[in-house]
Length: 231
Image (tube, rainbow, N blue to C red; front, side, top):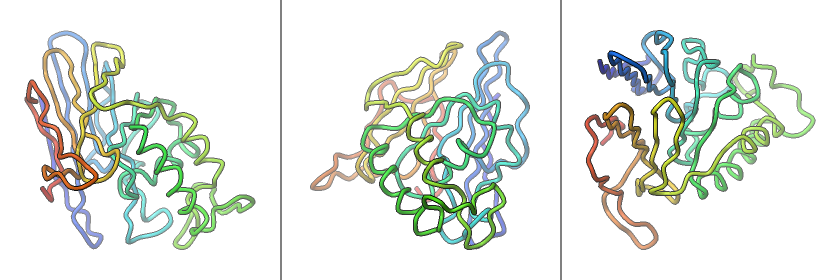
């Protein structure tokens, strides 16, 4: 059973919501989601994966976060971050430092390196640098969501996944990273479980330019594609 939903968040722009559930006669089961669901997914018997963990760049404080209160982050086994833009990665230190999430995190090497640099600047600009205490999970507009210590913890927890490399998450779930174009290090993630292939991608580009190749065309192709509505 597969469900993909697109929800409208009454806050200045459309937001993406994807919840996918794979139910078989026997394990493994899988839940895939982008953290802004219409409703809280039922607890799976197998693995739960979160794709991207960003903020709304036009808002600040807690208002900029996805609807994390609709998700039991303690049940999330892994977060896969597609690229370093703030709307795809900037909530990660909040999740690591200020929630009950204790799963794994994956990025490509360039995404991790640039994310660390960009978010350190983001923390300082938002007044969450060293010594600032406005980060206790109740940040309002203009207050920092987290500190550099939370960012350091998130980066320390992040594992690297090369393009065309596959990681086994256990329970029969395998994830492979493919090039997405767009920006340096941007990835698409192919999730394979029980013979089903689901490809998730955020921003992507099929046009090669001077410094980046075009997005890959994975082979064999996916059975299900989850993609930003923009494309």
